[in-house]
Image (cartoon, rainbow, N blue to C red; front, side):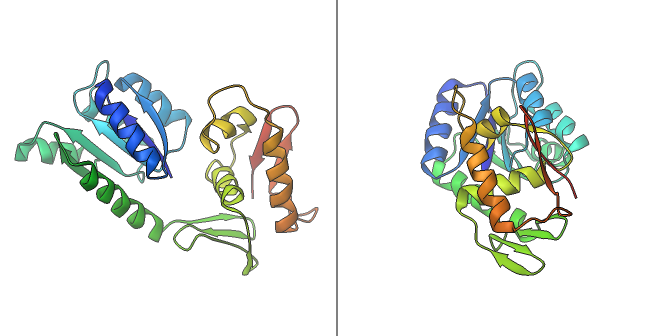
Length: 220
């Protein structure tokens, strides 16, 4: 699962990033509201941890801006603001949860897990005759289960979530592999070939197209 942390206090960012990576999550960070907004418009995240008092765009306005386009991604406010009115204001802006600073990391992790469980229960992705059930972590083609490795599952899920959009190899490396430096993108082609082979895609089932020299696009 990919978590975006939008927080301007470096110590908190480092603490959260290290702890959540150790829990197995993929992490992207932004230190101001403007960068956070840019990331949410160009990438897909499974959950957002959002500070209220941010430079450039404050957390409340950022939450509202995200919700214009994205109604589903869980947003958890991390903030020292804790009056009833402020809590209500944050929830009305579109936040799903509210954790007061200073907070227990163990509590935050449990809150994150709860939101992921809630998110997964109703998330079924489809691509032609292919179904990805995120709650059960299975892939079906015409109701027949297809056994994919974890990385193959993540790559297929990523492409389906980006359905209709060209995903460059560098974007895939960053968002799926969490690689932010120069790396051989040929590894993506190896995994993509394995996925196609396991799905046994026929000519008329051209659901995942290769864009030569750029990347891939998924379409029904």
